[in-house]
Length: 326
Image (cartoon, rainbow, N blue to C red; front, side, top):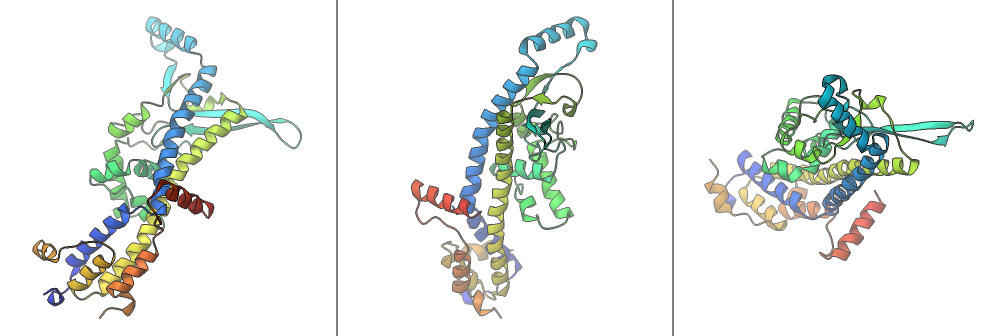
C-alpha cells in the first residue's frame, strides 16, 4: 500500500518536523555542553552578584542609603538620589603602563536578562540570543522559536527572523527600549522575575558610566569570568543548533528526492523513529542513490556526537574531550 502513495510537500513537512524534533531532544555532546553552560552560568550569576553587591555597598554604605531615603521622605524630590540598579561600571587601578604609572581598567557589567556580555551598555542581538537560549524551554512551550537567532546567524536581517525574535521578546516581557542599562527595567513577566533578584542600591541620579565603582583586580577578574560564562551560553547554543541544522540540511535534500511515502517511513525507521503510516495518511488534508533511506540515515547518524554510554562518568569524559577541541 505505502509504495503506491506518492510523497508530497505536506508529507515531506510532516517527516521533516517529526525527525527534527527528535534531533533536538537527543543527548549529543553539543546539547550537553549547552545544558552545562546554563548550569554553570546559574551558579556564577548568584555568587558573582553577591560579590557585586558587596563592592557596591563599599562605595554606597547601607547607612548612607537609609539616611538619604529618610531625607527624601522629609524633603521630597530634591533628595531623590537613591535608586536600585542592576548594571554597574566596575574599575580597578592595579595595572601599570610602560612608564610605571597606574592605569584604570573598567567595564560595564549588567546582571539583567538582556544585559550585554561584551561590556557594551547597549542591548544587542547577542543579548537577545542569551535570553532566548536561557529560557528556551519556556519559549518553546509558548509556541515561540528560541533558536531563530542561531538558525539565522549567517543571514541578513529579514522579516521571518524579525517576526520570531519579536515573538520571543514579547513572550519574555522585554521592553522596547534599546538601552542596555535600562531596557528591561520596565520589563514584565519572565524578564521582571529574572531581574528582580539582581538589584543593588546606588547613590546618584546619573547614568552608570559616570559613576565607576572601585573594586580590586581580583574582584574585577571574577566579574569578567561571570560575563564569559554568560557568553558561553550563547556560543554553546549556537554550536548545538549548527549541528542540528547540518543534519536537517541533509534531511531536506533526501526528503525532496523521495517519490513515495514508504521511503520516508523507512528513513524514520532507520533513525530509530517510529512513524505510523496510517496516521500520516489520515491526518493529511527520481532520488539520488546517496539519499536512499538507509544511506541517508547512516549519514545523519554519523554526524551526531552522541554519548557512547549513558553513565555520568561517560558524559563527563565526553564533555571534556569535546571542550578540549573547541
